[in-house]
Length: 294
Image (cartoon, rainbow, N blue to C red):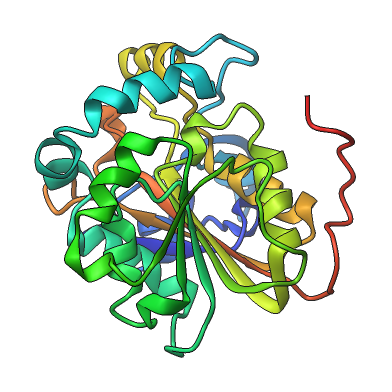
């Protein structure tokens, strides 16, 4: 699997006018798009190139406010009404594998079986199966807005002791400062207001708790971008980091993930995902006040 970790795009450096290999992290062949402004100086009668400034972007910009087919709860409900039938057997094997899941969850630091964990947008429980490798199922709650997806989760013997409830990621039915870990995989792309969902993640976490959101990244190739904008939300890496920081999270980290066949070759515009984490350093609600939910 191709992956790497970064803590914000602003820390990139350029050496000898070349792109850093994999952004300076092991396991990635992704190269950022950089525009260099060159100047020349005369030293010992010879002209030498000098980099006067560099502008780098780790994600393509996304057209603002374009309508997306299933980025709303009503459309997503009916989409998963039918997709739930084949989700675990057709969708996951190629695009959200067990290896991807387990590597993406590493940043969540599930080191104590007694942790109280919520899997928001948990669907059929595929990600939950990775969580209960480390946490007692009795301490895990699966939340999703799709009863059809949750029915599939209830049929899995390994999840019998998990609490399974219907709910809204942007209006969570949990008290403030009540859970140790918040995990959400493959759900943010359906949220009408991702910032509100991440503010809710902050609210329900205990002091020192960690949020881990796993989702797709906006593609680079123009045709892939077209279909991404029509279909659902594909945030840029910068947006993920900004949403976490705005909500009040500290120690924000982003880890790129992809299936083994992907190998991080992002220049072709294939959809690559990421796992983003942040730590709650102050108790109570998020410092970002958004007002009543529409």
